[in-house]
Image (tube, rainbow, N blue to C red; front, top):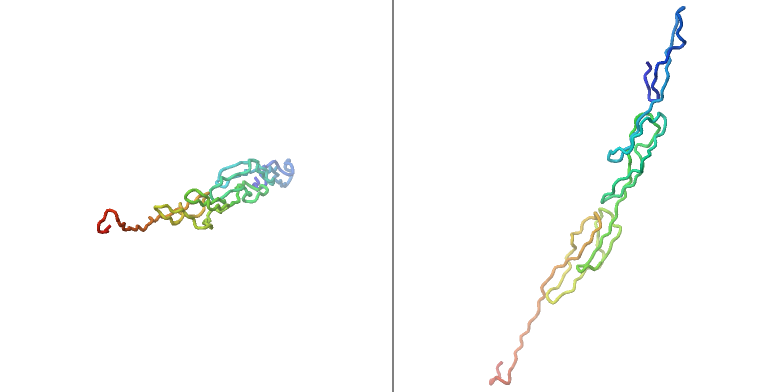
Length: 197
């Protein structure tokens, strides 16, 4: 026998020189045929899902992935784009597994600021996920009524870091208006004998 190595598996196929009748001391050397080994190359997605399995890939050849370009579902924070395989693809010297890797692009969203009546006060585009939005316009106002005076009191919902498109609506506190009531005396000169009201 001859131990296999990464490249070949060996099979005994005879002796050298050819065995003949003994006529004296003789030494024979085993000879072997070699068969190039073949290996399995596995291609996986980032989560371990097997995308493709290539069997019987000959030692010394460069493996190739023949499937569709791997994809990864976007989430609220990132958009994913296939980048490369890890580790870097090399000629086959044994069983190998390659895993898809992705670049991550931080998603951006729109933050809209509206008054209580729905009037858009400001629109902030391309606000990155995780950023704290900020309103940069004039302080919102609401016209007073006969009953109430309104004072801006913040936004609804409470401002928080961006995780998606969001609309903030101005909210107000109201204060009941107060008025002055003036009572005036009226002198009835027709019906009063003494001039009293």
